[in-house]
Image 1 (cartoon, helix red, strand yellow):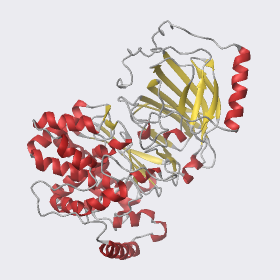
Image 2: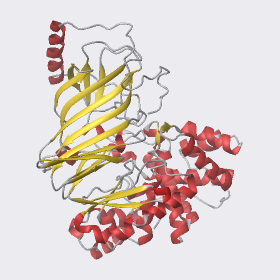
Image 3: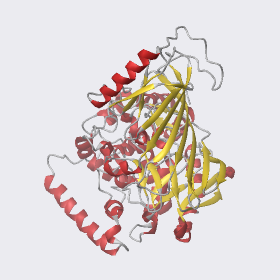
Image 4: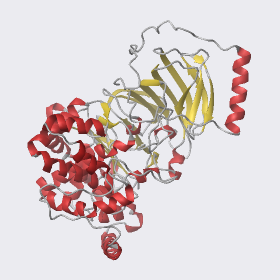
Length: 557
């Protein structure tokens, strides 16, 4: 994990002796008992306000006062999706300020116990936070290990955006943007990345796969424990655990990169033609922006109606039926594969510092998705960008400018994933390339993923690097494109017009009617229309309330 700007304190080495504290106040037993009692009363009546790191879109997400270096997650799956998993989360972190207590993001699961450095700690709930009070206060710069024994309930994902995904034969995860903390206690914000070790114990006959590389398989009696470790820091929203009656397929990518795909065992033959495209797609991306940034890659084919695809680090989550439904054109499916692959550079290796910087992730993934479709399938980039330009003012009214997206309503947090941060953000990149020229733009892209690898970066960082690479003053130009209520003129394309959203209600209604008709025809030809939740999603690519691949390709068709 990289040192964040929150502190300049030197990082202790994991496992090294803790620096001698300037002050460590041990709470006496009566005080601990009183605190625990009052905490229970508070949790039952009026929880304290969660802290948060001040993210504009998710004010209560994340926590100040410490930086996480690593997570060790252990899940025990009973073979059913109706029972909570038993779990143990161990967090290694260092204090960035003096701490008498600290918060972890955690909701819905039941906490059995909390230990700090091996000693019992008191805890209580505060909204979607777990407030921990250690037996001894923690001075700035000190190392701490927090162990939480808890449950993790897959049923919770039915009632909110993200968390566990219940598949036909097990579970997967979809934690973006703010749902990792309904699975495990954490500092649930992309600005605080950490290393991960993930252990999953499941009944024999199940296969577990997680982020990173497998380091151990331990078969004991009727259960098997699988262990995976990442070699690069990862944001909590990118954590992935797959548990199912799956087959893991192995192949080799560029420079001997291990590629492993997780598929339902019964669908192996049908999915293999798609999976073998991945090494070539990785090579294509490497020619554009440089070497793949992680230790492995692969696709997780989930038999579940998620309504989206997700770039979980080293193991992207896909709906299986995207590949098995004949309604979807080959070029479209391949471009979606590249979209999630591009996220491994843009969004995973270089994470958004805040959720307002989301456009840097989705805009770039959409850009390379469209570029791949242009080069491999003859789908003109300019035509797609012109269509996006025509819709851009409407997108800005509905969802805000690309770098200042509107917050979602309560219970609809993932509605920040609107067209303005997909094609609307790719349009910003197109305008920038028009302004500084293709050679400078390509140097900028490579420099961006190289300079900020394994870290988190902001919109201001991107603007500064664009100015450095191009030798141009671009602050005013990019500010208008990123924050303006109206779409600026497109360099080199004076004839392009953005439709005024206040003057085209009839046209919009007609477009919706035509789209609905098109969707009906496509659904009728699908093999399993009643089970097909994502046919509408991928056929119309107009569902702005659903994140990821569902909207980002609205203009591609």
